[in-house]
Length: 89
Length: 160
Image (cartoon, rainbow over all chains, first blue to last red; front, side, top):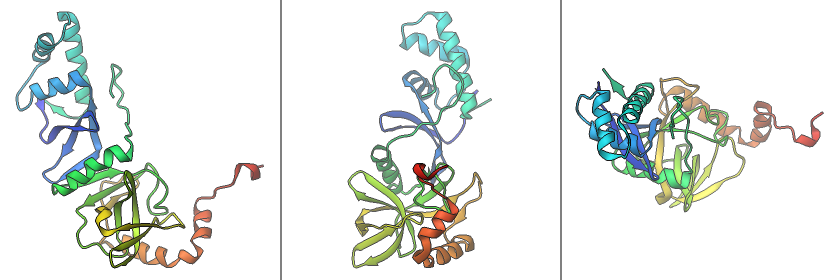
């Protein structure tokens, strides 16, 4: 899976937000706020295909967690991103 | 912030922190879709229900709905009722009172509204807004009574 086009990570009021961005219009009614780790992952997989395993590896690199937690969290993040409508197959 | 349950929560930010970002994006040349809060632009716009499409504040004239910073950190999205030299008089459609600012305090112009959950915009150049504006602004002398009729507010002590 990969990021949908036109979702850019910005910092607004100290929050990491992903804003649905047309070339011109920025829609704050379709803005997704991310926590630190979600924003970190989002930046890392920008512009490329990724899997849950990829995210899990990234989490293991950056954070002090065990493999089982990492893969569970990776799948949870993917589920959230899918619900928010910001990723596609 | 989304946490480990999978519901998507709606987050509200204070105007004084958030709207400068909107202003910056407008200055960069973007348009911004902004969800609206408050009742000051009734009856056309309703609290929490509608969104404004904002663009750069060019060609500002009386009758335009604009986003203005009337005091540092204090923003309103109201209609211009009068411009004399550089002094602007604002009045929300759902308000009786005025605010004042300078032309330079206007941060964006509303070029349309998304009302009642629709994805089709009500443009400020369209007939609906223009007829509504022409009628509603002329009814100002009886606005108090119209607002009460449309949105009755009965003080607690009078409720049975």
